[in-house]
Image (cartoon, rainbow, N blue to C red; front, side, top):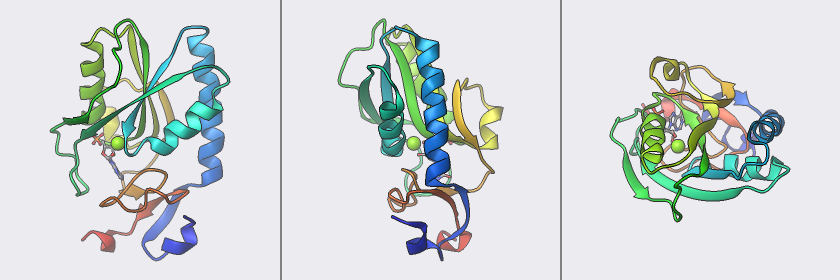
Amino acid sequence: MDLERVKDDITEVVATREQIHNRIVEIAAAISKDYGDRDLLLVGVLKGAVMAMADLARAMQRHVEMDWMAVSSYGSGTKSSGVVRILKDLDRDITDRDVLIVEDIVDSGLTLSWLQTNLLSRGAKSVEIFTVFRKPEAAKVHVDVKYVGFDIPPAFVVGYGLDFSEKYRNLDCVAVLAPKMYS
Ligand code: IMP
Ligand code: MG
């Protein structure tokens, strides 16, 4: 969906479709370089990371495997609850695997820090994190995010997989949702 369709709901564009695409191509090259010829399993966090996974995987000029997890931390509001629940687990065993978590956004970092610990406890060889967007709060918790697309202001954003009550995920850019939409 184009921005034009929802321009009254948003206050500013944080990243255009083209900016996101270009940045993901750069990051894909960095990841390929870092992993060399080691097998790589990309673990996408549903549903927000669907767009990021699709773009990252296609930008990688090498084989990758993909698996998915669904966790809940937000409910339908705009604040992190800190309580993480697995709604859908991985299909395959990850013992001795090099795992790269693919996330849409890190805000409090609670979800990712929990997920990284969880995957390491299953015997993965390594668990690194790629997130397309990171908010300033993320710097305060101990979650070591290896690949970051964009550092953005602490506003609630939608688009490129990010939703507000399941809407706006299909917006092709990322934009700040107008506070009037949820207050
Ligand atoms: P955290 O646990 O606070 O880091 O938040 C993790 C999850 O909350 C993300 O993976 C998103 O699904 C959701 N989230 C955080 N910030 C935003 C936002 O600005 N817009 C939409 N979803 C968000
Ligand atoms: Mg998410």
